[in-house]
Length: 115
Image (cartoon, rainbow, N blue to C red; front, side, top):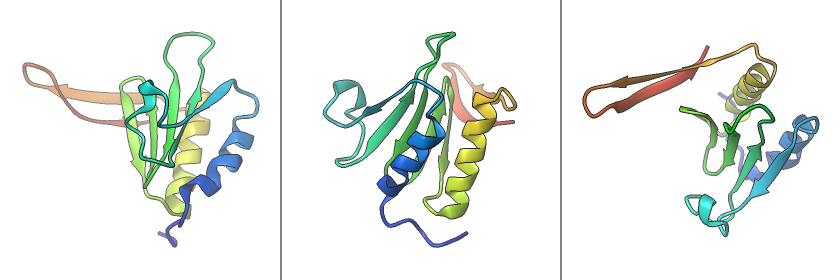
């Protein structure tokens, strides 16, 4: 692991550049759908032209990537960021898929991963 990023929002422009070929929106806490965000955090929402499933990238204390039932947290350092970017590219390029595990009645989420 490398040194922690002091401000995760410093990566916002870099991520927007990465997503320049996709339609995306920036959302902040003031939108009721995104009220879970911490003050000063942002969610990049990548719109999906083929379905209602959107991809969400939250820049908070850590990085969180969500797509459908899948979500994963990435440590806020260079290694975590690079791993998240690799996962984003893999999903968007159709080279990765996600698996989510549930158990019990009612179903309880156990975890998810990109493979």
